[in-house]
Image 1 (cartoon, one colour):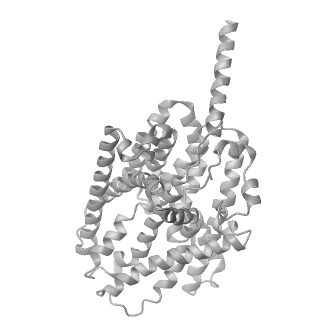
Image 2 (cartoon, rainbow, N blue to C red):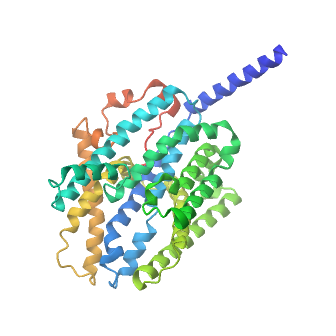
Image 3 (cartoon, rainbow, N blue to C red):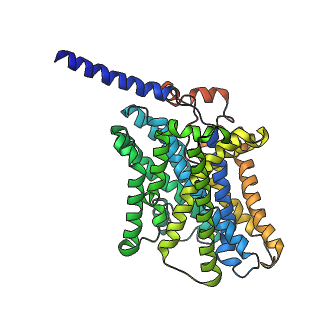
Amino acid sequence: MHSAHMDLYEQIIAEKRDFIVKAARQERLPQLDIYRALAIMGVLHVHSTSFAAGEQALNSPYFYWLNWINIFFKFGTPSFIFLSSFVLFYNYYGRPVTRSLIGNFYRRRLKYILLPYLLASLGYYALTLYVNGELTQQLLENLSSFMGALLSGSAYAHLYFVFISIQFYLLFPLLLKLLQSSRFWVKWAFPLGLVLQWGFILWNKYELHIVEKGSLSISYLAYYMMGAYIAVRFDEIKPWLTKPWKGLRATYKRLTVLLFTAWLAAAFIHVQLWYEARHFGRWTDSLWYELLWNVHTMLSALVLLYAAFLICRKAPRGLVTVLTRMGELSFAIYLIHPLLLAVYRRFRYSISTDSLTYVLFIYGGLLVALAGSWMIVQFAFRKFPKAWIVFGSVPRSLAPPAKVSSGFTAEAKQAQGGMNEKHGV
């Protein structure tokens, strides 16, 4: 009996040792910065065409193209959500959930996510009041309204993403502990996430009627759980991402063709459904829009993952370098690009929506938002040591050498194996 207890004790110790060794050996994945770059390009395409596709250019001869861009690229934010979960579970799944780990986790999120979110919300809200001539009127009412916007992610249209990310961070330790407790939960994580997400969608449609349901993390639970599942099973999925096409097994090849075919089919049907609704007023049941968005964007998250690894392996080094830097700055670009877009749109003057110049003007907004945001945040990170207060964590490539080495505890360095742990953006 004593021997059996010793064997069990040694088995537990061995499992914990394997846990720690696995965490320590986690490979850094530079491909994820390329993924971030692809996702932020999706966001910029949607935001740059939102006004044109939503109302301004409904009767333009170029409306089909503008609507196509606006709907096809809607994968940006859901892909960031998937990636956020993937990165967290990839880094933390092999680590025991201790008070120290949870404390460090929340300190980083408070410093690099919550603080920039607070400042961005305050800045955008104040700017909106100023533009509307309401900044100095009814101060107490404005303050109360701001607190409501802050606690719902609605201080400006794009900030809902950071708000739902904060909700996920609150749930993450519980989900991590759950998935660590049994392989059963890992196996069923994605199906359960999908069921809970769609259960909420149906409940909301028929009973709750929450208008801003997109600001609730449960609306994206399937993306989180898909990211968690792929992170935990990454060793098994990795060959699909890293091997050249000739070296892939026939099963992987068939699944890849199926993935891209289903993705393109879902994307084009999604685009067409919105074109019929916006241009001709032929609206259908809201569940169809929800379903097609869900399928399109969920498949997009997998396509972007495959594309990021392919680009890293095959693309010219110059392109890889540019995309990597864009990905490193993606969170800061995400925060400030709407400001540049808003300023840019004030220069439209009398450009007719019937002209090709209008289409070029819309694409100009995308370029201004990307290039302008990029230059601002890169300059800020290089010149101002406290830029992280506004823009989040400093990319390793832009941080002073001393900060790269001191910014992580020894425990975090060991567990991350040199990987730059970041938020999804």
